[in-house]
Length: 599
Image 1 (cartoon, rainbow, N blue to C red):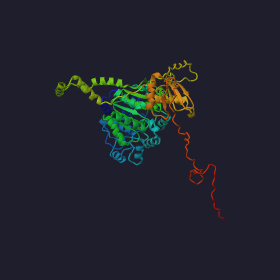
Image 2 (cartoon, one colour):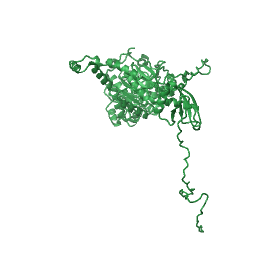
Image 3 (cartoon, helix red, strand yellow):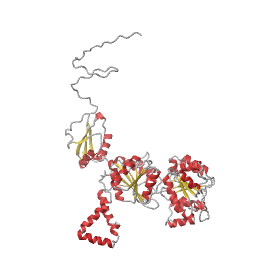
């Protein structure tokens, strides 16, 4: 759809950027019945909301004028939940309002407040900031909001989740009552609706619904992995997609540090974003991603809120998100402004059920597969080499002369092989990964389970018969409360196998024997030798009756008897003494005790 009528100055800015297609939310806020009204807008992340409210307040700030008057007290205030989002909004509005001569100032935490106050006192048209810093400037008299014509709350639901409700109420209560208020939020909980009723005047409700299958421009994939190959799977995914830029989400700061170090070791240009970084470090990391010095960003959820990276084509969930909203927020970093993107979830065997429930609640239909193999990546590398500009561009005369010199001393095959080696040396090597395979359990996800009153469903098919295999022994038994309920998941995790590949489990007093199918026995034995675990696992014979190696002494076993004499019984306040060797057992030699003195 083309852009509806907007202010002529802003229309020129859009034309300079070749911004010819309006998104649904932009078309809705620019409709004739929304002009000049308070708006309560619900739209997905990455739907073009910044440009939407920038255009919506254009007529409110400019009126019929082509340019704004000299900068004095601010005319518009835009509140964002995070520093990165506020700085991003400032950059978007700067190009949009450049033809109007608008002066835009950002006030965010982590930056020098004195410098911000000087810029505010020099005159400003639009102020963009975070709730805490804006309130601080208002209370200290550095920000005068008495002449505001428009206030925009961007990502209002996130600001409430981050605990900024009191700051937002303070800001809204200090602004003029005749202002125009625009409230944008990805979701509409009751807290947002109550705030809209209190601080907006007959607001027009606009809801831009998403597709039933999630974001239309995002392809969702679920990749089966084994728990100890998360880093290898991430490496192969980055090499397989070769996106201009990618972001990898972890749940903790420690996971971010560990994964960043792993990728740096493999040769990737990678930066990190986490709460422990200073604002200066975060700005440097984001700038490295924008100018191409870094291709990969490893981040936590809070650190990545609101950031918009150019050409972000790949999102990898190294650890599963906590809920469907976090999943959509993470994935919404890609597939923005009409660009296509891919969101990949890494799903260990033990987390398959949680992943299915998560994606069902988010109304996402992913395609399941194993991690990309090294062979698949090498095949893609061949195609990419043939399409590389190095071979597509026409050679210069100097290049031809050098080629003739090389051909005089080397064969064409040697020169081509050297070119391939040089080209591959610039790429991180793919990793050997294991696909745990499709789960045979056909139960539906938790969100789709049968409820009382539903029509009866077909019974679940029985487990397939187990074929004989190799036997293994564990140094744990009934004395240590061994139970298949926790032994089976532990064996699947340490041996990189599925439940269907493990047969009988026989628990004895001090040991446990179990059977593994012959097809995966060698791989299982190799995996348990490499894995770290407190329980020792050793192979046995095919019948499971081969004598096991002698058990190691238990830590709580009593010490072995020796010929040394036992220590003399210890009395209160006395150290232990060894009984004299010449004193027979049972003989007691009384000591002379002094008579007590009378008091």
